[in-house]
Image 1: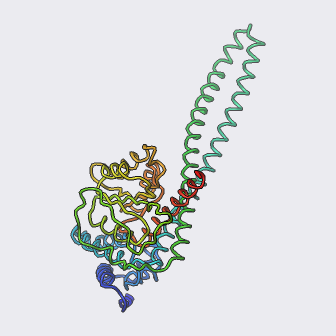
Image 2: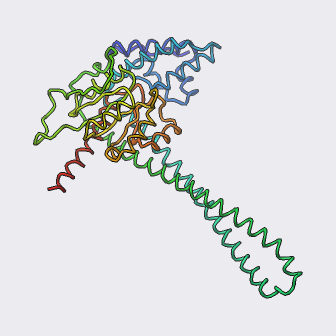
Image 3: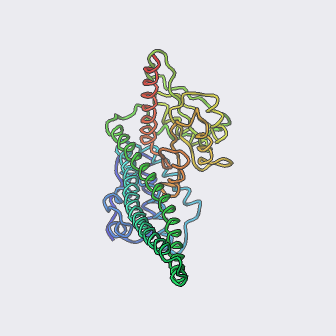
Length: 390
């Protein structure tokens, strides 16, 4: 079995602890890095960097290690062991966030969106061809039925011919009605497929612009480690003022607001710490109901970051309530989810009104890039509306 690369010398404490935990899991598989990478259809060099600590893997990679180790040993890992590694992974992501890592995350999201777009385009072509074939068949049946009607009009006095033609006409009418039903169903499927493709294309455009922003941005002045902090209790909407270094807005115009919704206090604290370096006003709440109240109490929200998995009222239900309110219906919603890019959850999120999503544990640079992007769009629209009103 090939030896593992040594741990990198310049690792943060969090990255080193995660890498050591991953190495212990991997060594239990008793297989080489290259062989395991082939097994999981991954790049061997990238996986080696995960184990040496120079790159933090997606949580799905860590779960694969737990799954494969359980299969190899015949014993599954305990929930406590998984939660321990998850805690190490969260800390490593928060401290190792960098433009390069954010680019990788956004590129994966772009690849997912592109794959959805291409898949829906192919499905649309198949549905279109099936729909066209059935319409042609219906046209053929209509011609045949008209021919029969003409024959009936000429031969209607001959009962034997009419009796002979009746079963044929009945079969044609039944087939035509069935085809019309299929045309209706296929038309609905085709319309839904085109909507999904349009959403995927729009998402590709958003992600490409986010990538451009991340690639061209400098390192933040605030240390990413600020994203990790002790848990705090959030009982009601909390307004977080922007950092003192934020540039004043022209003409004393109010800063755009960002609504952050998560039932986990440590997640709220981490996100407010990461976003406090931006030129925005943050409103953090701990439930869907508090989010709806905050939207009534405050105005001029640029974007909403909404956790999907919350008790009582989850992110999907909260988003549906938000979109039903005319004053908030155009505010973009970013879902914060630990469920990754699962197509079912993504489709449900987009149906509820979300325009983007961030995976847990979140990368600070990705979070900042997405919020800054949608805030920029909000400011452009506000400036345009101000120009029209003059």
